[in-house]
Amino acid sequence: MLPLTTIFYRLAWATLLGAVIGAERTVRRRPAGMRTSVCVTVAAALFTIVSVEIAKRTGDASTTRIASNIVQGVGFLGAGVIMRERGSVVGLTTAAAIFAEAAIGMTAGGGLYAVSGGAALLILFALIVLFYFEGALNLKPRYMLFRISSGATQDLVPDVHGLFTKLGINLDNFQVSMTGEKNLIQFDADVSRRQQERILTAMTRPGITFEMLPVERQS
Image 1: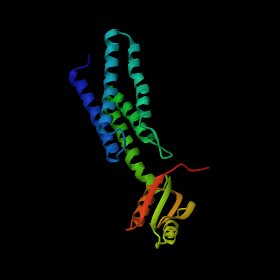
Image 2: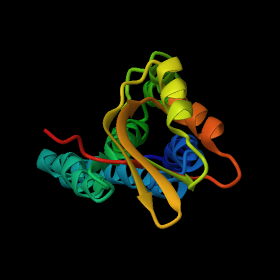
Image 3: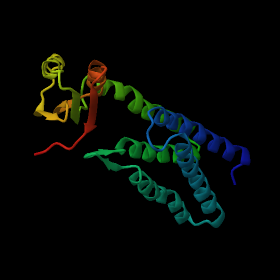
Image 4: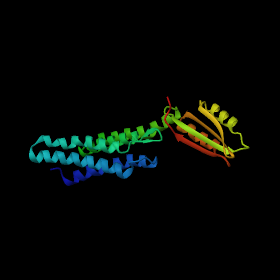
């Protein structure tokens, strides 16, 4: 049997790696934060250690299949964080992160400290660096519904067209209507996260109600 200190070192290393990846998910307010990530990596590491130790004691190498079943269990867990929200599918990145965390936990449980640490760094690179890279190059725009309401005396149509033209954004399904004593402008557009922030800053004014919601593109 492995010395207890070695087992604890492996579990502690799995805990650390899970906590680091989970912290990134928590900061971005995504499901499956630090506690979930630590549970995944530690459980995967422990299953790996136990399956190997049982195989040593019984002489039955087939018991190592315990570790292989981690993949199926994590698949169910990952599916739980994927959901459909206002016409868009969200949670895919978090589900993939959980899958990677299980692999990292198994690697840590196998005593491959450098490999598991390097894998965790690569996952953090994908979650943090590539996130900003996508935003900077507008690689992942979202199709959004915009609703802007204002007083009857305010005509925001020129402002809206000017702002979106400046940002290079095409408007779909543009509609202007009167609701009670308010003007309502509604349209759809593909916008990146950075563009969303700039639009929100520009359109947040006294007397204006601004809504920006993800929707499914109509064929």
